[in-house]
Image (cartoon, rainbow, N blue to C red; front, side):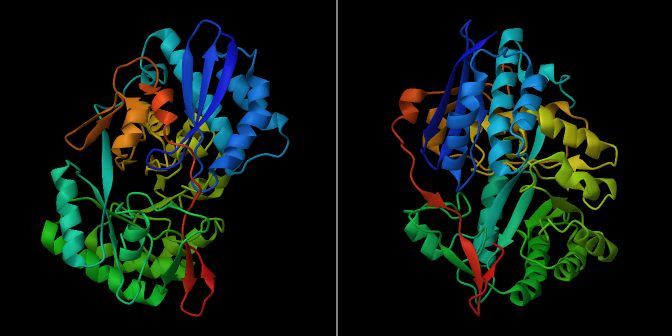
Length: 412
């Protein structure tokens, strides 16, 4: 199977997606997700200008060799742009190999380790009544685990919450569905850590009182806290039995998590902005986290993320793969196949894409009883409708950023 065509396809049905499609000389095609939210065109250039010329004429079956070639031959290694581009190639090659074998990809990865993948949805509200309505809606949709994000009194617009300003800007689309807003500049949001730390435990107390002790609850602090603030939050949330506290502090400072661990037993999930196993070495080896948050799309593909998760398994650390709407249906399908096969699966983030995205990317996965399954079609089980994709050209979009009350730029 020799690669004789490679196409980089950009489409923006509900948001911008970057897809690599490889075609072999015997007519097999494979798809890979290369979307990097807010910086999509940087990966487009990396693929079109630097990677695609290297793929033509290569054996599509040599997945590990191609991964090592693309990683090592660039010399300038790692980083989100490089690893998203490599991931797209890697997943497309796995798609081709599974189609050639006539089986769903998870079978090539060792077969199913479970009947389906527990997924969590995103509930949010500016106040408790709105949050409770969102939780009930997710329960009606079949979710058996739910992330809780709440507005903070005195703050106008913060991560994960549909604010009036962002709803108006995005023509009625809820902020927590897709925070990347189309326009020439990123939106500015506000932040007050002390107000957040005071308010959030009262939110979880109310949610537990309303929905009981059995429902798994998650929360994303989204990198906004210092280590001691993260430790304080983790401890204050212990009475409410969180499934996890995500990205409690910027994890570039790996040693910071030692301080957090000393002060709380709330489980920690880290890594959606990590790109390689080297980002995880210390925090896995020292058991400073409980869940690996990386996405197939941003972490070098199935080949590399599987190695990270195998490493994590030695320390009883589980997967919690990133899966919001900035992961395309192609990247989501790759996560489902990998999650079904590995032993140390934990939970899968799942945000439902919009109707136009589902028209562009035709998918075979199933959602039933709170569980996802990638389906039984050969390969990934996703096909790209190029005619439909062509209706939605790229539109410039940025993720928001934060400022404190005194004007200081803060982690979003």
